[in-house]
Length: 78
Image (cartoon, rainbow, N blue to C red; front, side):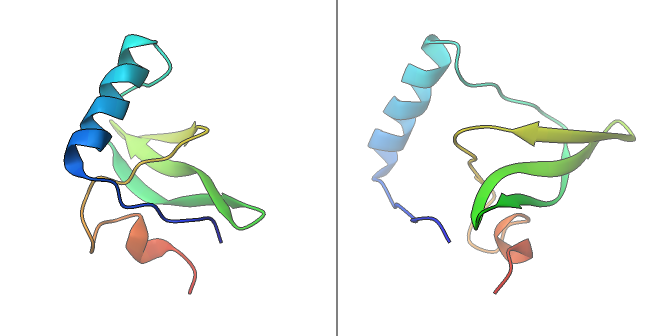
């Protein structure tokens, strides 16, 4: 499994703002995450549904901002 980093809130916000400014990050709203896409033990994306249509989202960095009992974290293998 990959490493888990807990960064202070201000550092997370600064990193997200920098990524957005460099056009390397994308935010997709109104999406129901069904589960993670795992490759070699790492989360590389998510399977989701948006407006009734299946959606696969992949990225070098995958952020689950739904909290400790959030949708993605609870669907990871033990």
